[in-house]
Length: 312
Image (cartoon, rainbow, N blue to C red; front, side, top):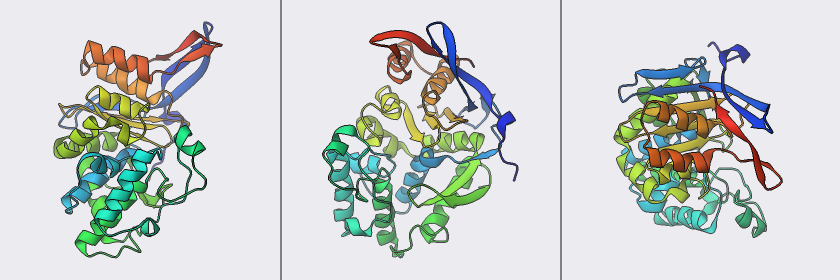
């Protein structure tokens, strides 16, 4: 396996303050069409990386194929990285209750809610507040439906995880380069940035119910102010991943995958937006709305004195 190194990343964005370049963002970025053909790329997009939670839509699709029949907010929670608001946690509890499961069945780590208000109201860490608890509840439900062991559902050799691996390779059009453990304890598959874009394009063709539910409940994918929620508000399926990963797909099944080199997510949504804009995949109104919501504000006191400039 040839892994990424410093020279594999391309310049993607510059942050200015008071007319001076202050910070620089390098990374990988690719746009593919509905057939997986590369329309534009930056950096070594064929080397393996970890998609992190950006691959959750594909995992949710697998669970649907295995018989998991959720709808509305609960369906979105099966692929969400939620911030632990009461509405998020209530939806996770509904999934568990529907399948006669309890919070004690969850094997994700304990955490405080990520939403500031919810965190302030929380007295202790819990598994259900962890941002992947919706996925874990759905993992458990899928195991119940298929008669699989619910105590070992995070084992890479578990039938559920083998199905996840198989689907990832099918949609990415490549073999998984490495299997390790994600932050939530689930198996994590390394594929290339190009493979991730292809997988998200493939998901956009097969996961129409999931996409419709997410567009109807954009807050549920993470939090109302999140970049993926903002893209959903404008009609684009989107998902963030840890360590600077961001994906977007369109109704025409084009897909963007971005990986920021240092793991900071700040520039990734803006880079994705500009790729869509350059290839006429976002309308003028949607483009302006997303510029306003996903570009970071550079403030000096209460005044904007700089900006992020995407350089691709």
